[in-house]
Length: 350
Ligand code: SF4
Ligand code: SF4
Image 1: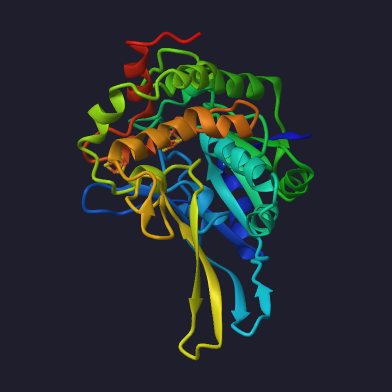
Image 2: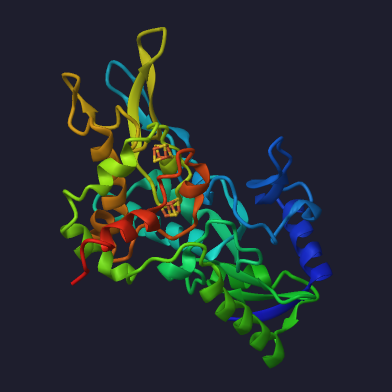
């Protein structure tokens, strides 16, 4: 696969040409907010709006593969149903390595067992132009989780080396797209050395919280921590707001409901994000809630990240260290590193 160098002007023209094509182009934009500006993935109207120097986006890019709300099918109460598949194509620019790894995990999960055609069709139609982190965010800990850089999943990976971007194609789709960047040249050994220096630095620099064990120790540690006091210690100030779930790039739980229209003859099946910290997440028929205590819900989230999901994806830990849950938690209890390190004070990994 090619590795090219695009001057900043060449890159800008490349992005403007993509925007002028018939595909939707999403990138990271700065959002003006009362409490200071933040970054978010949004439609790009011009390359000037793109901010690849961002620290963290409010929501992860999972919303393009798994929207907050979607219609899965429409039906007639008499019996017929028609699946609703979104076939639109889009280009996503500026996905950080930890978010790319979260997408890779979701790809694996949604293609297992009963493949989720809604997710997989969207994913197939998304071209991802990832980028190495230029500005570490205040709570990132990707260095601890081994997710500060990424090797696969992207179609193109960009690294800002100062006056230019190094752009590596990761797939045939990315190779074809990169070939359209007129003015791109082959990256030199010097360019590649600059890129390696940035990636090596990020492996240590995205470390605002330090996990006191190897990520691979977590499943074994949690095996012994089910009754640890940390769950109650932390959960007693939890608002059950669900922010730690909704902002997380690896949380993918959803609720499905059938909505019957006013004609009582037709309807649609809707899917929307759900979260294990929300009080009614585990409510089932008969109004029985099998995970009602806050500490049980709090524990479940950390067990999913560190023990349950890893068993489905070859041992990968389902926390990529983005730090969004820490940013969004008002009582400051959601930090997975703080929880795991608290357990490590009492229990040693095998
Ligand atoms: S963000 Fe914090 S307060 Fe809200 S549900 Fe998560 S842990 Fe509880
Ligand atoms: S648990 Fe928190 S830090 Fe880990 S991936 Fe989810 S939002 Fe990011």
